[in-house]
Length: 76
Image 1 (cartoon, rainbow, N blue to C red):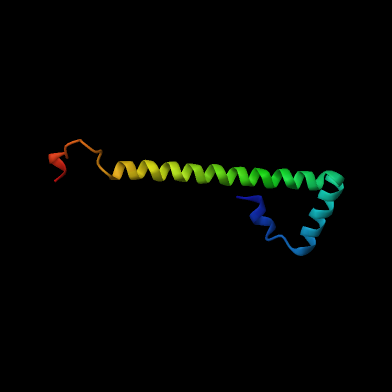
Image 2 (spheres, helix red, strand yellow):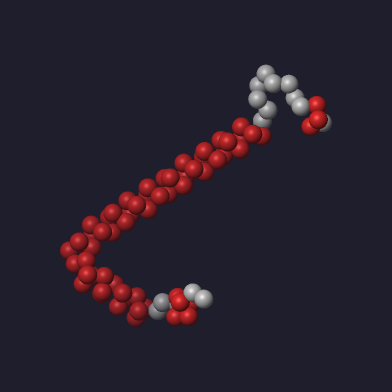
């Protein structure tokens, strides 16, 4: 069983404690860490979009018959 499910939802007090701990751990590097995290999310979304486009292109090639090839008589 998932441990997080046992703890329940994170409340406002817990979120503030987590943010204070993060501030203490990262200090002045926090903006840099957040910036790099943002860049990582953007790169991940870009990769997902490229993968979806590639899959869409492959699916559209499969759906339409290739030009110049005779149709398969068994498919009728």
